[in-house]
Length: 255
Image (tube, rainbow, N blue to C red; front, side):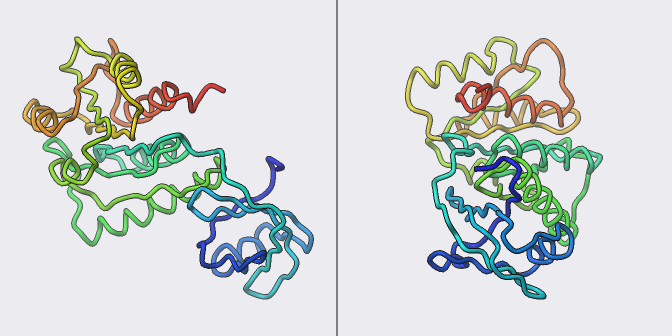
């Protein structure tokens, strides 16, 4: 499969045997922005770990028909599902950067976290608009990085609600500057030696970090506080770095 073929996501219900009809924004992009022609090859992902290589065989004014030639399971997804709960940063462009990079790195769910030290107040209506923007960023990052799945971006939520939402059999890690004895790599190594990892969640604080009470609450819910090293990282840096370390230890980065 060519690395340079354009990639689009489709709903599995759009796939009818060996044919897919693309409509909406993607059809507009193919016809009016990319200006692809009849015979152009593209890749379609169904969001469920399968991808389809096909040829455009019909161009309408607002639809594109694709004849599927190859269907196969995607190899671009991590071996387990990774959730990133990221404290909402004061500047929205920094949080958008985290959404973009987490999507590129392979997170399947991104949770904007409201904590005791979150300085941004997000009303429910405004929060939903921002979530929609973050979801679009995740979609574009998934396309660019040739992923088979689109990360799900939640509406902003508090720590307790997030902790109650995650499966109890996954590894939950909370990097914290107050933890100096146990490093993130050590925990990941121990987890791999103990059992086959069922999944993982990373909980990253906002500017100012977590309070001790929040860390204790997370610990009681099964989260493991870890050190990220001798330097204090910015919130947006910590999320990206922790996710990168986790993916590397899972064998998903580095070749």
